[in-house]
Length: 430
Image 1 (spheres, rainbow, N blue to C red):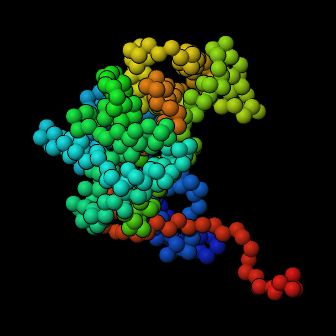
Image 2 (image 1 turned 180 degrees about the horizontal axis):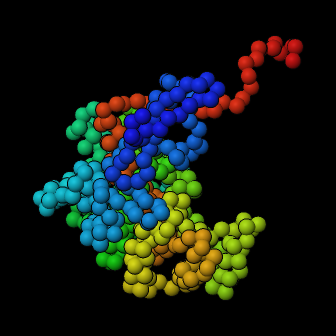
Image 3 (image 1 turned 120 degrees about the vertical axis):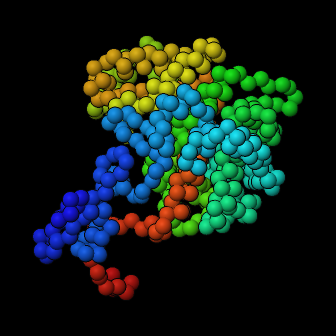
C-alpha cells in the first residue's frame, strides 16, 4: 500500500479501495474520496461539509486552534500593522505584494473606477425606501452584469481582471448609495482624490451644502475593518460564490449570490447582533444578570460577539481591532452608554473562569460593531460594511476556481430517506 493512503473496505461486498492522502502546505491532510463512488458505489455523508475540503486553494489559511490567519502566507498581524486594504486587495487578487509602481497603478485604477453607470443610479428608484440595504445590495450587484457586459468572458484573463477591478472599486459607491437612498438623501458621486475608506465615508455622510471633514482615526479604523474581513477561507458565502461560479455564471452574479448568503444572521449579521445585545442589556447595572443568563443552559439568551466557530482560541483579528476600537472611542469621545456596557463585558470575558474555560473570548464582530456605532454607521449597514471588505475575497476565490485545470459544476450528493418507489393512485381512488 502506498505510504500516503488508507484502505477502505465495504464489509457488505468485500470490495476494497485505496484512498490517497493529500497534504497541503499547512493544516490537516485530506482523503481524496473522488473515486469512492466509482469504485465502491458509496458517497460520503458530511452535513455542512465540516470535514470536507471542497477545493484546493492558495489564498487563505486558518488554524482555528492556534488562532492563525494568513493571506497568501502573510500573517494577518503583519498586514494589519504595515499594509492597507487596497494593498491586501492586490495581494489577494494577484498573489503577491505589489511594488511601489504596481501599487500606484492599481490604486489609480480602483479610484478611477468608483463611478457607476448612470442607468444603475436610476435603478435605485425601483426599491422601496424602507428596503434593507442588503436587499438593495443583492439586487444592484447582480444588475452590474446588465451594465458592464463588456467584461463577462470568464475565459479571458483580461475580462476577469476588469471585472475584479470594477467590483472592488464600485462596491463602496453601491453600498453608500443604498444607505443614502433609504434616507431620501442625495446620492453623492465618489471623489478620486480620497482614499478607499475615506471615499466611502464621504459618500455616506457628506452633503452638497457643506464641507465634510474626515478624521484620520475613523478612516484608519474603517480601512482596518475592510482588511480584516477581506477573506476567511471557505466560509458559507465564499463557498456560495465558488458553487455559483462552477456553473460558469458571470462574476457579478456569483458575487451577488455571496452577498445574499452573507446577509444571513448566522453569517454576516454577528456585529449587528452585538449592538442589539448591548441595547437589550441597557445598563451596566444589568450586566451581572445577563452574564448569569448566558451561563444558564436553559436560558435562550446568548452573549453575542464572544467565541468563534472556527477559532477555538482568541480570534487573531480581535486582538488587532481591539486597539483600533479603543483609539476610536478615545479620539471621538462619543457619549454612548453602550460603550461602557461593552467594555465591562470585555473585562468580564477576559477574567471570568466560565468564559476562559469555554474559550468565549471577544471576537472581531464584538469590536467592529462598537467601532461602526462610534462612526455613526447604522446597524442596518454593518453587514454592508462586511460586504465591501469581503468582495475582494469572493472575487479572488472565484478567479482561482475559474482557472482550475479540471472544471466541474458543483453537485453535492445526498442520503435519500424519503418514500420508496410507489405507484400513482388516481384521485378518485385515494
